Image (cartoon, rainbow, N blue to C red):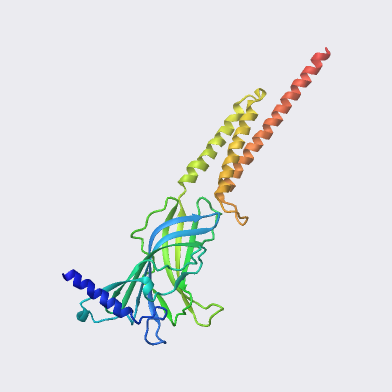
Length: 318
């Protein structure tokens, strides 16, 4: 019976609070008062950093807190300390991801409920997947470190209307799932005020800087180590007698294997001419060495054939 009575009180209180509530207006009674939004992020998982498309996709849990002056009540009178209301029924800060490139336009969809206390404190905790642009520097690939920045802020409200503050200077990693390709060295958060050409008043933006370092074992084991083995085999190839004709075929096989590795490397990198990856430079040297070995083998074979011809002609004359 107590649970049924408590549920009826929650329904009646929620209906009373939302009867004349306008979710399109900022939840302050004075137009000159800014809504102070506390901004926090909990990192869940790095989904992908695509070098070819230069995009970064991440799963994060947003934590937003603010005071709503129209969602207050006397807790002792109603016997209710807090309520859960769907986020689509109340005012929410229009937080967008500015450098978003996904079809959702970087908006936070009203998926979960919000928790409201009797003092009007609103807590909005919601998971979200964002896809942002992330310029990738491949000059040190596969020993590279990348920084992907996600820029959040209000789309229409300046700092005098919606003031965003940071709860912490770093994102929470308590529930973070490690990525198999990237190591997360840091997730710094910074608050900035920018003035855009459209508006004279400053807008508050929150920058989340993801500091990533590539795991190199895959590339060392599958690309660097085979190249070293092929270079060793290239040296032993000169032990094959040149007159058998198998030495040239051996060198050609090594050259084809290096070309395959070069193709695999080019497919893994973005199409850009601004920088040459370090691994690509290191793979070009073995290609040049093998090409030189093939050229020398052709010269040796040509000289050997020429010497046999010179010895055969006088013998035939006699």
